[in-house]
Length: 182
Image 1 (tube, rainbow, N blue to C red):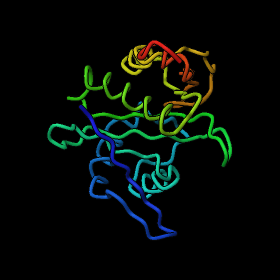
Image 2: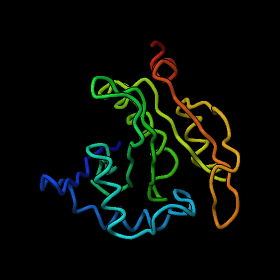
Image 3: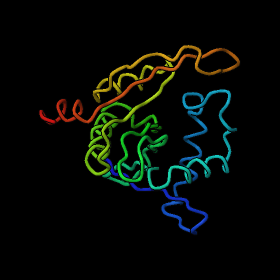
């Protein structure tokens, strides 16, 4: 249903992969920045996006519709916990074109978290959302995420204190939910 291709920007080593999708990512990121950013986020501009992608290393993915290679969105992992021997956890951020919300998103979540717990051998994936983001909350719950809590007044959004909800998905919970064993 979907496929993931790495978007890599490594200016230090002059390594670039799949940069043809940069304009799609920039357009989508700009459109949904209000759901992704707070008042402290850098201005949504091309160079800040490049810096963010570069920071993610090989963990920034373009999501394509497998049937026609249509750009569906992007997903990336950042804020790692662990070390060079074992990565324990990453925080996930997803942004999809509206026409791919719904069933595609649910199937994408299963495929992506399967990759996180299988190929990357993570123990946990976490997500942070604004309380008003009901669509993302429903996908997180579908995927097996548990609400860990609320960070009250964690940041500012539009000049006002903004809470952040924190969710996590453990590998064992994911395997049990979708495959029946850990």
